[in-house]
Image 1 (cartoon, rainbow, N blue to C red):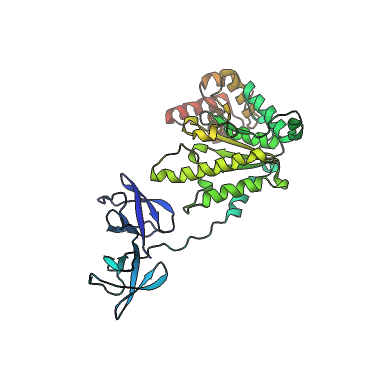
Image 2 (cartoon, rainbow, N blue to C red):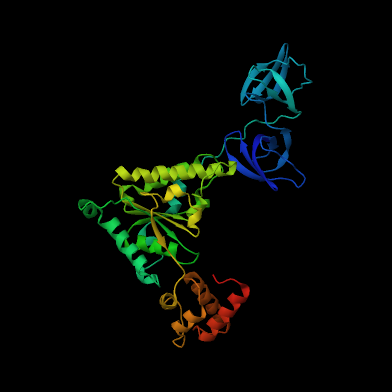
Amino acid sequence: MAAFATVYEVKDSEAVIRAGNGAYTTINLPGSTELNVGDVIQIDLQSGEFYGRIAENGLERGNSIGVIKEEVDDGFLVDKNGVVRKVTDPEDYDVKKGNTVELTDADTICNVLSEDPVSSRPSPPEETDVEEIINSLRKQSDDLSVRGFEDFGGMSDQIRQVQERVELFLQERERLEEVGVETNMGAIFYGPAGTGKTHFARILAKESDATFYRIRGPEIVTKWVGDTEEIIRALFKDAAKEENEPSIVYFDEIDSLGSERGDGANQQFGNRVVAQLLTEMDGFEDSDENIMVIASTNRIEGVDDALLRSGRFDWKIPFPKPTAEERVDIFDTLREQYEVSNEVSSEQIASIADGWTGAELKGLLNEAGALCVADDRNEIKLVDILRSYERRVEQGVKE
């Protein structure tokens, strides 16, 4: 059944709308459709099909919507949000059974919006299985597909310091507190894509024997208002359980959830999510929970400033593109996972792949391995890597 929704923002061929149950969503508009903020539209919220505009600039303040059920002696019976009540028609509109009408707060008809019945509220949302979502995010350290810090090539001195500090935080919390060290820790890893931020977070969890929660924005975003905040609350509650401590809660690409707040209608979701994250992280101050919260981003300038303040993601760790020496180390680490000929010099590959990240070097080897097998060989030779390099440069894709 079609439902009414209010237009909150219009941009090009899309509109942000708010349905009767408070859910915000974005719809595509037909090519010739022109809408304004405040318009009331008719739409199928399940399919996103747009039926048309019902009223310009919204309903009058305090007014509501109902569907005529039947005519009685001195008025009409109207279904208003599932409740049938009697209303009058002082203006003597041409009202028939099944019409959708606008009602004043005095229960009088003041406009006929549609000749057909249209609900002022969508069907109730299906219940979000929060527990199932949390279970899908949780990984025990034994389930992580990494060995340890030997899997991270090109580790800089600063990243080694992160290793030492995180291990102390998760494994020696009581001793740190005895000497007065604040153990509430949040860190943000920032730098170009492919520099190993997520990989390093997994290794930290593996080496610290910590439960690992990796959260990517779309995994916890639903179309119902309040669901994402509830998932975040449940996530931190699960991480604090004794059987799951120590825990690392890792927000991958935090800017997809915690971007800078604003007043636009389509930013209201982000505002609520940031507020919930702040609430959970500020709650660490008086708790004994052995949880470390890490975020990563390719654009630290896009993260809300409130998340970067003291006691939150205030420990900022750069993950820059590797130097030539670090690329040698990364390639040496990667080649252990492949059958690479001894004739291949790591120094030569590091020189050729100037400016490449670890992820791009791994992509180089994957392509070289495919070329090797295509030539009916079981060992990657230098010629395979050079051909792989040429292909990836020509395609403009290195990852």
